[in-house]
Image (tube, rainbow, N blue to C red; front, side, top):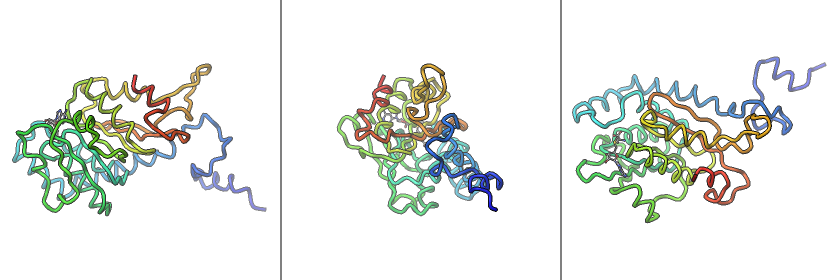
Length: 262
Ligand SMILES: C[S@@+](CC[C@H](N)C(=O)[O-])C[C@H]1O[C@@H](n2cnc3c(N)ncnc32)[C@H](O)[C@@H]1O
């Protein structure tokens, strides 16, 4: 006689797919398990790009310009890998500058075959040649926006729903928290918030801490009310995958988002 399916899966050492887990599954099982794969994928894709001709070309361009203020190779590789893992259609980045980070996001679009994806890249300074480092063949999916992030938000000139947001503008504590809150509200379920330079102040860990919910009595993690699937930090890059409440029709008015708004 065959053993029941569940035990066969156990025998083979295969975890049950998350969507097949019974509702009554152990509530204390780590709920981020379905997203464990992000670590494997990001490690693999980042290693791939680090040894690529593209990385050599971009490093050469960066060094010719002078690397002051530009994203370093390790963080570019992580950003590239996260973008490929996420496969976004709409990406917004703040602090586009001359386009080191932009180039790696655009390269990830091409390598994933995301021909319709767009990168909206916001840069305030009139003095820099916005996106100058981006190779010509990657430019068709690049949408440069000149001005302050705050003004684009205030004038409602950015996509209402986005798949991925990268913060790399002003790294003051106040501004970082403001951007995280503002763009978190626009992210869809499973949307990705990425921040560069998370080591410069406590904005990212503080923002992250508010995405957790715990049972008041036991102190155990309450997966239902916790609003991220996975998060982490790699080099100077922080990332978090948003978990939107199923019942929410308006993310801005959800209890969680109100909590994050302080
Ligand atoms: C660290 S650099 C960005 C580097 C870029 N991501 C790269 O890898 O090439 C930060 C940029 O953010 C811009 N910036 C700062 N505050 C801003 C704001 N409020 N809105 C838009 N851009 C801003 C600065 O002008 C500067 O060029």
